[in-house]
Amino acid sequence: MQVISTAKELRYINGKLNLSPVGLVPTMGALHEGHISLVEKALSLSPLVIVSIFVNPAQFNDKNDLKNYPRTPEDDLLLLGKVLRENDIVFTPEVKEIYPETDTRKFSFGNLDNVMEALHRPGHFNGVGQVVSRLFDIVKPDIAIFGQKDFQQLAVIKELVRQTGDKVKIIGSPIIRENDGLAMSSRNMLLEPEIRKNAPVIFKTLSAAAEMITGHDIPEIKTFVGKQINNVPGFDIEYFDIADDTELIPVSSRNEMQKGKRYFGCIAVRAGKIRLIDNIEIGLV
Ligand code: PAF
Image 1 (cartoon, helix red, strand yellow):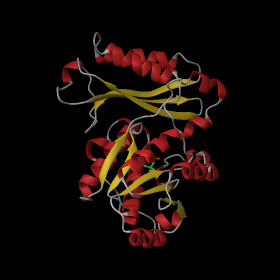
Image 2: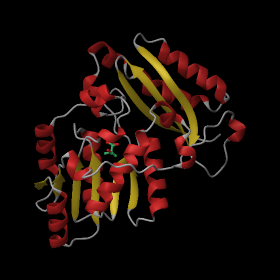
Image 3: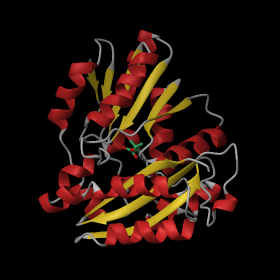
Image 4: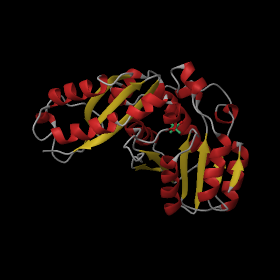
C-alpha cells in the first residue's frame, strides 16, 4: 500500500493508475474490525481502494470531543498493511489539504436535519457533508463504503449525493459487534472499565425492543428501552426512535409503519463520559 498525504499527489497517482472502479473508505482513524470490514467490502469491489484517515474538525460540535477523539496512526497503518494490496492507497491529509480555505458551505438535508443525531449534535452533519464532498472531489471514487452503525450519516450521505448529482455509488456495510454485542466504535477504547463492562446493555435492549414489536406499541417500547438503559449506573439515554431508513421519520405508533419500508430502532446513549450510538432493524408485524 502507499501512504499519501497531499491531494495533489493523490490525484496524480490515481490518474496514473487509471483503475476502475475506485473504492473509497472514509475513516477518522482509530481503526478496528468494523473499519476493516468496510475495507474488505471495498477490496471485493474495486481494483483500487483508497482509505482516508482524517479527523474532521468540522463535524465536531464539541471541542473536547475533538481533542479527546482517539488517534492511533501507527496502529492504523499496521492494520491496513495486513489487508491492502500493493496499489491501494491510505490517504492521510492534514487539515489544510481538505480545507485550503474555510469551508462555509451550508447543506440542507431536509427531514434528516430535524431528527435524532441532528437534534443532539447541531452542525455535525453539515461538517460530515463538507468533508465527504471534499473527499469525493479529491478521490473521485466510483464507490464509497460507510458503516450502517452511523445510520443517519449513511442517509445524509445518500441525500448529499442525490443533491449534488455525483455518480458515486454509496454502499452501507453491516455493523460489526464485539463478542458481547457492543457495536464496534473507535470511541469504545475511551470507555471506563466499569462502563465498558455494562455497555452490552445497549444492544441487549435494542434486541429486546425488536422482539417487543409483535406485542407492544411504540410508546411502551420506548419506555422499556429508556428504563433498561437508565437503570444502569453511568448510563443515560439521549433518544430511542424507530424510523424508516430513507427519510428517517420517527413513528409514534405501529399503525404508522408502512409495508414495503424498512424500520430501524436507533439509540444514542451517554455511557459515562462517552456518547455511543447503535441501531437494529425492527421487522414489521
Ligand atoms: O464515520 C466517520 O468516521 C466519519 O463521520 C466520516 C464519514 C469518515 C467523515 O469524517
